[in-house]
Amino acid sequence: MSSDLASQYGFDQHECSIRDWSADLAAGLPPSDDEWEETGTFPWSVLEQLAESSGALTLTFPARHAGRDGSRMDAILLVEQLAMRSFVVAEAVHLALNGPAYFLAKFGASELASRWLPPVAAGTALISIAITEESAGTALGDISTRFDQHAGGIRVEGRKCFVTGGALAAAHLVVGRFGGEGSRGLGAVLVPAGTRGLSVERTYRKMGGNALPEAAIQFENAWVPRDHVLIPGDPMSSAGLKEILRQYGAMRLGIAAMCIGTAQGAMDRVVDHLRTREQGGQRLADHQGVRWTWARLALDLEQARLLTYRAARTVDEDGLPSAGQATMAKLAASEVAVAITQQAIQAFGWRGIARGREFPVERVARETRGWTIAGGTTESLLNSLAHDLLDD
Image (cartoon, rainbow, N blue to C red; front, side):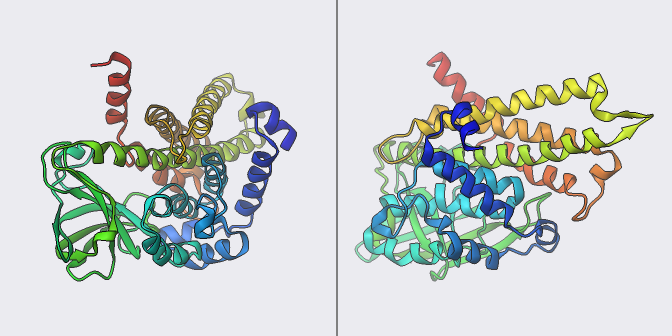
């Protein structure tokens, strides 16, 4: 396997080892996603076991925070393999390696990181990222959550919705406004879940991904110390927004890895079904229309994978990818994941729409659908790519 990976993707020995290690970890996960999804149960015990046995949750953390100094490619390979087996475990690991915990490890004050990273590393805590508002989804310039600076700290006022893991998280990386309008004045502050004035208003029941639910969170006169600021905002500058988007590129790339892993897992199931299922004395795999459909999807998936790997290789000194490359990867991967999981339903027939552990296809399709919205809608990503292309 390692020699194949080296020749196909230019992996070095370390990357081949990471990929094989990741595949072994994924193979050891329990087949319990259907139960977790139906009951809305987050698998804390599985995350703790994964952390204890492998140190997977610290793969990209700097060594100064007991991390492994892993690359963005390391993180992408791990998340991709986990997503082939378990959507919720892959998403939880992704949040640590590519999201708020990584940002805290890389850019946060030392004391703050020392307080919050150990429980994340142990699999006993999550840190969410709170961006979306009722009237500010893709348009970050419309964010109204406020950070008021005082001698005693930072006062947080506002409301966030659709915060992934919001009701479970031990802390939230909140994007808000230090004054200013539009793109000016935006920044980010870490707000612990136990902060007075912070309340979880509700959780949302989604079409898929309910083991790690989204929540609406209210901040009313919620105070945090000044060292909880991760990205400062200047009312006269858009520098804070640019830094938010720069860091968010790692999350966008992690979503791409989740999508290609989920899509590959679905394709593997379909290929096995098409090779073994017969209709009218002929394998489904022998029908030309079926063959062309899945050949095209395999091509699209490989293109998305190559875009994802390219973005993971071309990172800056902080391990963050190019915004344009991360955007391309996320767009391609999310769209092919939806296409493959929808076609998987058709390929399996009644088995594709039945629910239960022995019929995972419809659950995976429901879980995957949201990724053309979360992390940047398809339309917003196309607008971003068009802006880069046309320089307007």
